[in-house]
Length: 382
Ligand code: SF4
Image 1 (spheres, rainbow, N blue to C red):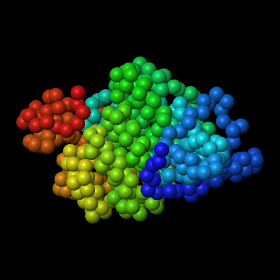
Image 2: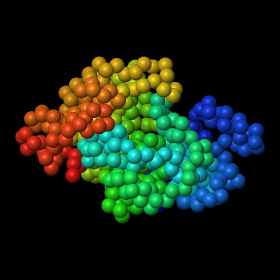
Image 3: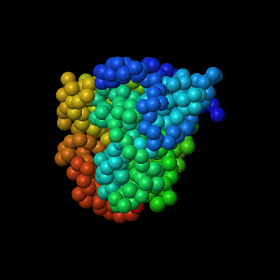
Image 4: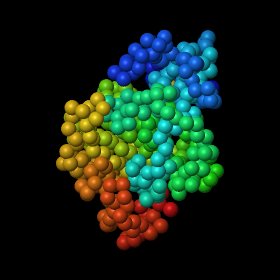
């Protein structure tokens, strides 16, 4: 099977972080090389799981087609995300069945504001990401390699069962980038579906078209981080590209998957009026005015500790600009009480869902309709 891979980046192009430099020094001292397969280091009980979406490139090399990075991986090496490794000409996922985080969260925390308000989501992640965002909130796990973090084996059936026993109606693939644990995510979603549970993905949207097409039917909803509307921001601050993310958003909405968008507003980097207006206008035009847009407040961390938190005025202005560009549901996140958390009826303007932070304070919807004017409010409400 062949795939269209718009961007190719070899495994060795990932910038080395200080932590991985130090890890590499330690491994070198122990006779190992960072990024090279060390079969002896693999946990003996880890069942290897062959990856989906790759092709052989001749000899024992492979090209991964899971995300637009399209890593070309020689034998004995892993891809940019570190989660997939070529062993003897076969690409394996190293994170299948190895969650490093399991939590019960409110669905509003993801955030989804138009998906089963107040629902509990059984949230999980493995290590790994195909981006290297300088502002990542979870860099300690997203930028970790398999083996860096304790990860006891949990089968998809066990995950689904734990979710049900926790009173959760949904699984949420979140915290790191679910695309890099695609095979595990898909099998967990299938196991959840078998128990009558749904699944949501919280993603950077950097996923290839064939992989998304196969995954979307398994998902109830998807939240995409649209980190900026500038390709240079994506390249310089995230190690990614903008256009593949826009393509993912268009594919999701065209395919009928409920989609919400989050943009973290970072002072001086992506918070200028023109960029916000262009982002919102594109969303309203290409995705439709009903797609919720969440502007989230930045806090200084990881490699952007030099920047201040997003001013409240910037968030409020961004919300006003986006609504003026035609987005009907624009929210403010990480700023409880600022006034950007309620859902208003798009026809009469009355508040139909009140929230404070991640908590639903009141839900006045009547079977998805405004109780005052009867207008249907877009979302998954039942
Ligand atoms: S999923 Fe990982 S290995 Fe595959 S192309 Fe993307 S970064 Fe490379």
